[in-house]
Amino acid sequence: MKIKICGLNPTRDVQLCIDYNVNYLGFVFYEKSPRNLNLPDIKILSSYNKKNSAFVAVTVNPSDEFLKKYLLGNFDFIQLHGSETRSRVIEIKNMGFKVIKAIKIKNAKDIDKHREFDAADIVLFDTPGMENSLEFPKNLITKLPTGEKYALAGSISENNIENISKLGVNFFDLSSSLESQFGYKDHLKIKSFINKINELKD
Picture 1: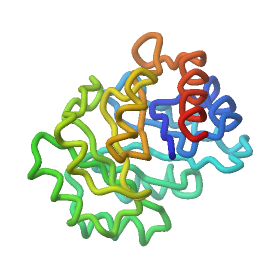
Picture 2: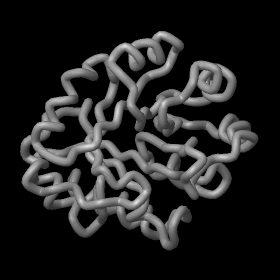
Picture 3: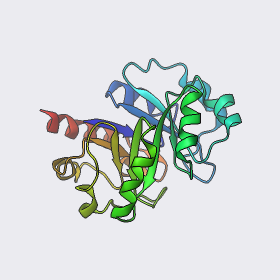
């Protein structure tokens, strides 16, 4: 099982996630979000020994200038949440990034869009909620492609992770369910979730 935790604070949350072997650590670059990262804080990330974790910059239609000036060399993955096309994904990969492409799923037809983004390293199936996490429709989970290239987001928590994993998902993206208040990660919730994942692995 793989885990990505999104909306992390560079000072407060990173070491805990590295210590708990969280696979992907997500940092938001979207000015409308309360989880938006201040650009000077990028420098803080360079002080960490990432070990087996990867740093992900979560963006919406990022410009080439922004990618090259601030993100190149500081992040392993760029997560794309905007209207990016297949060719745009390839352009960003050619800059030296790995790419996670998020696809908002409202109905079964939306799932087919993942074929457009075969160039992405990871495809993230998400709800349309963006900042306000909506529950991913259970009837659509079984229709998702399986494998380590495909991740699921949308109200995943310690309480439903076992049932979701039984439906074939093994790559989970979390944010708001691990917060004590909007935009503020709760370390006890993170530890408890990781412990639950480790139980399911055994």
